[in-house]
Length: 289
Ligand SMILES: C[S@@+](CC[C@H](N)C(=O)[O-])C[C@H]1O[C@@H](n2cnc3c(N)ncnc32)[C@H](O)[C@@H]1O
Image (cartoon, rainbow, N blue to C red):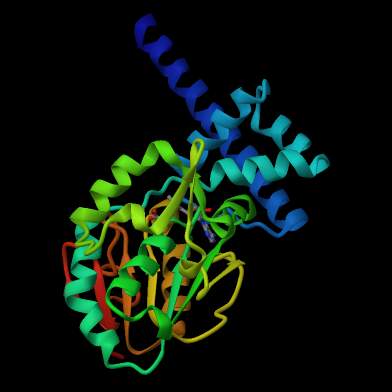
C-alpha cells in the first residue's frame, strides 16, 4: 500500500466512524422526542431529516446532535421550534393549478351525486389548500353540503390556518394560480385586504374543521369521500408511507377519492392494487376494494 493509499484509507475510516456516530446520535434524539413528547419522526426519510436537523443545530449555535438532544429534552420551547422546522410548512393557494382543474373535471361530477360530502386535508399546513378547496366547492355549488376536515401535526400552522389571514404579497401568484385552476369568478372577491394582509370571508370557513392530528401516531377519526394528502409523504420512509396509506384506506368510503402530491404515487405501496387511477399525472385515485 502506498502512503497515498494510507491517507485515503484513513479518510474513509474517519468518515465511516463519523457517519456511524451521527446515526447513533440521531436515533437517540428521535427516540427521546418520541418517548418524552409523543412526536414520532423515527420513520421520516433520513437525508432530508438530517439536513433539517443540522440546519437547526447551526441556527441555534449548537455543534452536535447530542447537544441538541440535551436542549430539546429540557426545554419544551426548543422542542416546539424543532417540530416547526421539521414540519416544512411550505404551501400555496391552488398549488399545482392543473390538479384543481382535474379535480373539477373528474371528481366534482362524482361529488354531485352524493347527498353529503366529507373531505379530509391531511397535512394541511397553514391552510391555503383548504381555502382553495372551499372556493372550488363554492363555485361548483357543492360547499353547502360539504364538511372539510383539515389536520396537521404542527399546531402553529393550524393556528394560522384557522385565522384565515395571509400575506398580501402572495396574492399576485395566488390569483394566477386561481385562474389556471379554472376559477370562475374574481379571486379578490373572496377576501378583504387590510395593510399587508388579506382575510378570507367568513362564509368560506363555515364548513371547515381544523384539528391537530399526527399521521404517524394518531388513528382514523371519520369516514371520508375524499382525502387529499399532498407533499407530506415525500418526507416519510416506506414503512411510514405504507402505514399512512393503511390509515387512508381505512378512512375512505367505498369509491372514495385519494389525491396525492405531484411527486407522490400510490404505485409501489402496499395499497397500489386497491385503487384505480383517475388521473395519472395529477395523482388522483379511486378506492376500488
Ligand atoms: C409541505 S407541507 C404540505 C402542505 C399542503 N398539503 C400542500 O401540498 O401545499 C407538509 C405538511 O405536512 C405536515 N406533516 C408532516 N408530518 C406530519 C405528520 N406525521 N402528521 C401530520 N402532518 C404532518 C407538516 O407539518 C406540513 O404542514
